[in-house]
Length: 181
Ligand SMILES: C[S@@+](CC[C@H](N)C(=O)[O-])C[C@H]1O[C@@H](n2cnc3c(N)ncnc32)[C@H](O)[C@@H]1O
Image 1 (cartoon, rainbow, N blue to C red):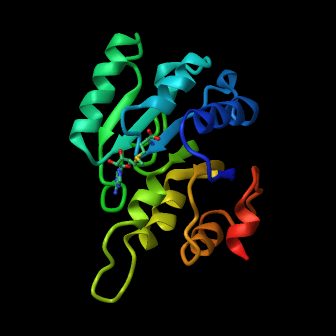
Image 2: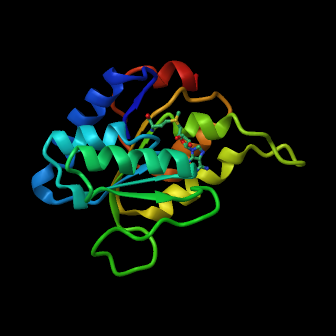
């Protein structure tokens, strides 16, 4: 798990570099971005050498998915799959070639989506919508898969995320220690 509080192009480059080093394109990995928006990160991975069928994105906004699909057509990347899917209540299709209905992803990516979900309204019992995030993410990952996130790490929620998704995770990047203490 790699955490960085900086957003934008800098994050895209760092996430792509990290993926190239740890989940190389030559290993034909299955990569899913949670909240892929207009697809910027997935297109950057495509340009870095990942084949389109390795790459998928999900977003609950049909407009974002339509835009990403449109951009894909202009970049010869129609093989990247973009799904309309609410990560908190629906399951995306399984990773290509994976037999189970669930999971099978080698790498889950999140650039800003955890934070966006954390900003949502709490329910009557005061539970944040992001409380459902860890278990849903862990279901999608294959055993020993990677979860790479760029987020601002809200103080009360970060420990839940960190503990549930991958108890044996390794940290990359800076900033997390400040946030957790
Ligand atoms: C801050 S944007 C980041 C978009 C993209 N990752 C990027 O860096 O350009 C957060 C994205 O998450 C999506 N999103 C928020 N909540 C979601 C949910 N429950 N399920 C799926 N997508 C969600 C939003 O529609 C939006 O596209």
